[in-house]
Length: 262
Image (cartoon, rainbow, N blue to C red; front, side, top):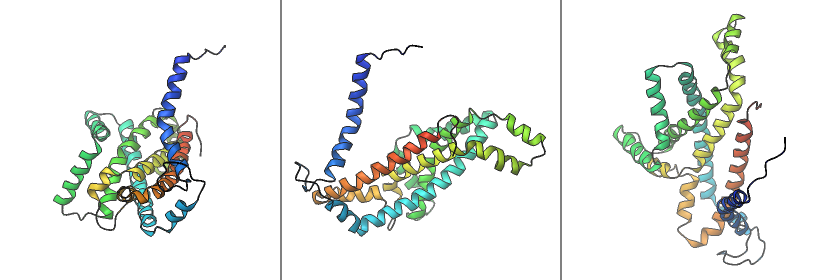
């Protein structure tokens, strides 16, 4: 079958969108190796900003906090989101439709509203703001994305293999562990990677629900951005985060392809 030529206007629009999205990131990454303190002009290649970044104990501690919170939020949101998606897809009822709407509603609500609402909730139940409140908040908003992704994965799930396993004498635990989990595993991993990226990147909600000793990397970057002398270090930190996020997103994209295997 002969290939259909792509219209020139479509190609130009695609190039314009890619330039608009990625040119600022490219400039930032280039400036992370610029010896110039303010990045106005190129003064030569240098690793000094990365060296200062690795010597910044407050930033390293904020990174460790972010990774720990992200790991906890990922495990909690992935487990609950997968179970929620299974129930929503497997069991259909008017109550489940209400459940589905409530699950998808936070996707349309601005982050600042969610942050304010969670802060008021934690204060009203006398939950001290800190590590626990940040993890709970991250699980809450990541849960919606995991559920949505797993619902899409379940659209191609053949429930006849579950019935076949039961006909062969498998128990509910064996069906879950040996049949359902291996089939859904690529989607579970991809959903977990997305949840980790969302947790890693969140600033607005974390700003409202964090307390002393629970500063995350986005909060640290926000405080560093207030002084111009920290901008080159922020460029170096952002470069590492961009590369890490891109790698995680690439892995998740490959896992979400039909027929993907781990």
